[in-house]
Image (cartoon, rainbow, N blue to C red; front, side):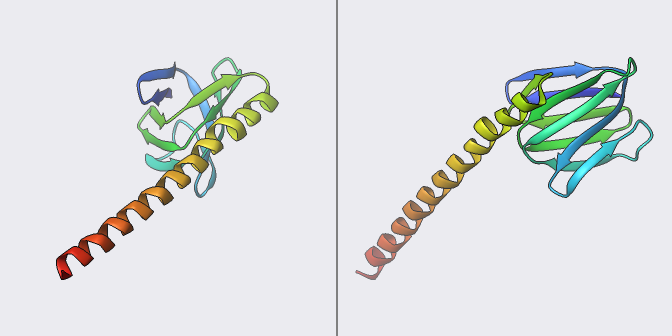
Length: 129
């Protein structure tokens, strides 16, 4: 299989001859083999591993995104990714960088909801007057 990991502004990784891939989705871990049917899945922040034809296992920390398998090509589009050989460091990267962004996003969305509700309330008062 051909694996391509895409970030918003660049290609993070392109690898050919991938024999298997395991990623964490919103429905749990999913394994991909070359003959698996085509599909799409929502990725959650976590670890992704793949094995090449040289039997080398590679680990990546990926942020939330989407994964699509179409034929021999697997496209992974995520907001952020990091690679390395030390799993402890990769897990810490997920906790420190990827999950923290999600907390900031929740706070931002809550602030926007307050602004929107205030605008709607004031507009309704203006229309009544």
